[in-house]
Length: 182
Image (cartoon, rainbow, N blue to C red; front, side, top):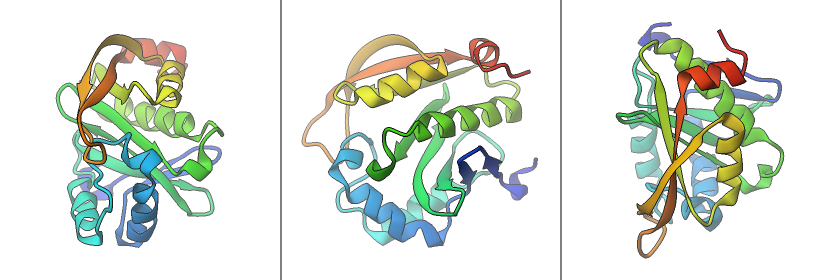
């Protein structure tokens, strides 16, 4: 798929698609929840609509690593997002707390990673991290096959100071084997 055609990933319960202007209100609501904002590095509280528009534009799929996907229920309701940024590529994701505990973050991230590995043949490793006070993300990453590589400190615009975070790595080969992808 070329950069202009974007992407659409469908799972049993979700659709991952590009973010659009119609997502601003839902993003502002989700991002305003301190349980979400404190776990993200780049979401301020409050999250003004102008900043969300910039965040959406910056996140557009352009045919290379450095994009985000909206996570929506099959009925179209936006419930979160995931992205792949940097070198080495780093996975990030967030979910509306109303949807926590249902396996949706794992379902979305697994589909997103499967698509990314298929799209980018040279993508052999993906990193991720989470704040130490976010054990739910540790469980998601473990289910995806990420291996812990270390600890550090990380900033969040919604926290007063850097906080301990845990670093992970996922190798393409181990993901493909454990998720039966060819």
